[in-house]
Each structure stands twice: as C-alpha cells, then as structure tokens.
Image (cartoon, rainbow, N blue to C red; front, top):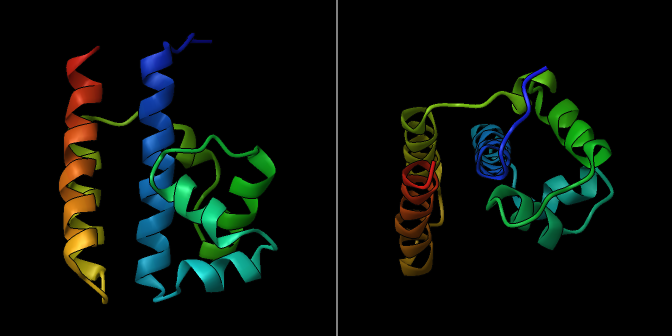
Length: 119
C-alpha cells in the first residue's frame, strides 16, 4: 500500500471538499439544507468543502451517500488540473455570487496551485 505524504493527504482533503461541494451545487442544495440532511452543523460542511477541516469518515460517508457520490472515489489522489476544473465547475454553479465568494474561488485556486508546487 502506498504511503501518502502530508501534502498528498492535504490534496486529497481539498479534493473531497471540492467533490462534495460540486455534488451539492449540482443538486442545488445549500450547506444549511445539507447539514440538516446529515445531522451536522452548516459550519462543519463549509469547512469540509473548503478543505479546512479533516472530518471523520462517518460524516464524509453520510455526505457522499446523501449526494450520490461514490465514497471510495473521494480518497483518490487527483492531478492539479482535475481540482482546478472542479473549482471552475463549482464557480459556474454558484447561484449567489458576491464579492466574497468570487474572492474565495480566486484564493482557492491559489491554494490548489500552492499544494502542487510544494510537492
């Protein structure tokens, strides 16, 4: 079994957040609505989607199940381009874009790029 570096684990964490955010946006569900569906806090969902929070596998499993995302696929190391494309798809699906969210997506791209430069 491959041993992942700390940076690779951070990349996987960002991917999990992006994948779940994309699935949520595709279903047009707010973070608050999703948190009610999985008995969690909206703040926790937001932190997970931003890759700021390492959640338990149980919460990730509930979210994946609720959003019809294959759980095991979430834990695959992805190329930088995959994450950047997902970030773009999320941006396009946002229905309440404001300056704060526009800045968030710009910073998120910087975070993704920095993770791959550090490898």
